[in-house]
Amino acid sequence: MLDAKTLQFSFIDLPEHLKGQGHLYMTGETKNGKVCMVYVFRFTLDIWFGRADADGVEKWILHNVIPLEGEILGATETSPDDYGAHKINLWAVLDGTVYFSTKPTRRRRLLPTAKPQAPTVTTIHALDDDLLLDIFLRLPSLPSLVRAALACRAFLAAIRSSSAFRRRFRALHPPPLIGFFFDTKGCSIPSFSPVRRRSDTDLAAAVRGADVFLTHLPYHEDAYPGWTIADCHGGHLLLHNRNTAQIAAYNPLTRALHLLPTPPAEISKDRRGRFKRPDFFLLLSDETPGSFRVISLCHDKSRVRAVVYSPGTRQWQIHPWLGAAPAQPSGKTHWLLPGWQANGKLYGALRKEAYMVMLDTTTLHFSFIDLPLYFKGQCHIYAAGETKDGRPCIVSALGFMLLIWLRRVDSDGVEKWIIDDGFPLEAEILQATEGTRDDDDELKIMVGSYRRHCVFVAFHM
Image (cartoon, rainbow, N blue to C red; front, side, top):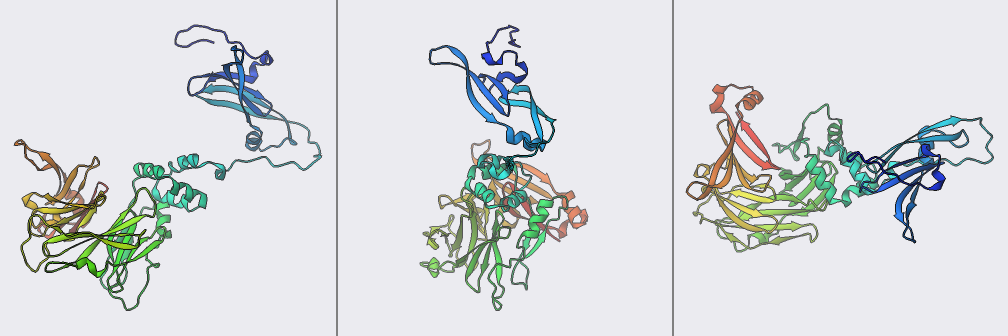
């Protein structure tokens, strides 16, 4: 043996039966650096390690025997009755992997004395879950994973059983945009417009197989306006039917439907002045597939409260009222505007103040965030969220610019919102609207939401 680093030779003794059989064995190392020897004997691969025996003498000891007959006959499409001896050549043992080749030598066919048994063939159904999930991790997109999961129950069970796999897959494959749902006046259900990517066959198949017409929702002929979208999160729709007092959490891809009642009348108990009917938000669990909660925010003339629905209890839990900061002036208009969801938190803008209400959906704790005075009464031009490292941020539109605000300490030692970056949108917007720079006064740019570190912007002409 020659050590390639030191260029020193050494000698290693071998088992007696390998004398003169150099073409049948190969030495190497395992992944952890242990010296090993691989020996071919008929249709088996023998693994030998150098170890001390019961007398304390170090010698080669047989560690494992791996049968190769099924794999070799399957790869060469032969059987023992069709071919004679197979010549197996060892090439290398590298990093714990054995490389070998085989070449069958044809012999005269003999009449079988008994019906030959078919060789054992390893299929994908014989793989354990760890190897199966490692294969699924290499799929190109989420629609590809959905199609694989629906191929058989074993695949679906493997994916459902591993939250670690789902986290890794989401990190490697951000969910693609399949299309848009719209609430359309005069229609009893939302309409759908797909994003057309002809090159992505899996995405096209996912759209074709999805229930984009929402046919599984209960239909009531006299119920108008029918189902409207309350929230959309993680490929799930949260829909509300005011006439039938129903809420539906629905996944058009898997067609999983959950129906729940609207919150009870007790949510307005002890209200002060005008009571605002609640907004609804859908929160999905990353750990448990199919698990979700629905959180509703409602308010009276000066306070806000959270109401939470859990499918486990099938009940709405009503939380206490919380006073707003600062105190809201009395009036007939609602002081808290419809909110949005981002990174596990719910946000609501105050109509006439430079503040936001924030609810942490994990702790169900309310807090208040001050805003730049520029945002006072301008809730349509900004949205709040978090950066990838969990820092609070605000995205706002100013003319044809998209501005990113971060919370930082200024030169006076005071923490405030400071513009961190800006992105010009003029070229993209004018191209999309087929307009010109002279149409600036006719364009109204709105920041819709900020989810999964992506900003959704809408504009009207």
